[in-house]
Length: 316
Image (cartoon, rainbow, N blue to C red):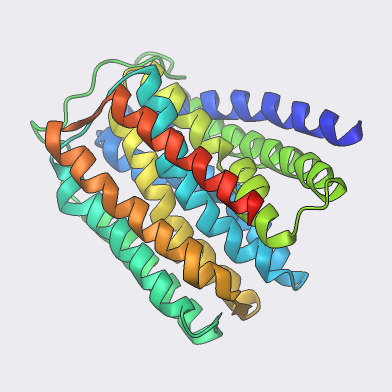
């Protein structure tokens, strides 16, 4: 009973946090004249990935590597297959050409690198430092990117801005982002707390919990933020949020977690789940390339694929 209550509270906090985060980030993007895609890759992506970071670091600190690494791998699979699938069912997702030049290649390269580092059965402190160094360099590259170009056309969005009152609008939007991130982290923690309690009572292993229950729970902020962005007709934030979160998960979260404690990687993750993560990221390229959008049919196929994956995990 208590587990169900935590799940319900978590969902309420996640919905509120996702709405505040997207509105605040959109307001900041307008004030700073930043492309919405860059905001999606940085502020929104990192903010919605905070639950994964907290859960993975705590799991490593407690010595539960199955949850720590499985959380990241499961979250990345969920982000592409389930989140993009569900969002595309709500509204087909338009894709900018810049996705093929920067966002997808970095996301795919991060997935491959993580798989290669895990093949020896552990991620040590040095490898964690390398991953953190790469994500820092990537964020620095984004910060140095030029401002909006003619390619990035953003329709007016509902934000937390106070018209032309610059300082007040900046404070309000920044507060919205911080409060949104806080609600997302709290909501994810409550959801995971309840979901793990329910899954443990059902006798599910820690690795499967990390790949499914925990990864889905910590990825709900990405889902809520992406749905909110598409509802506001802001596809740049929706796509950038998913790809940016996957990049931050594979590099930043695993890297920081490995600095806390070396991460042993279970053989089934290396043989089954990590290759699947790489494969799902690879499949995304032809989906995006063919019509420069994720259609409802393609979204449905992605979602069905994720459901099949979860069924295989449970039965195996």
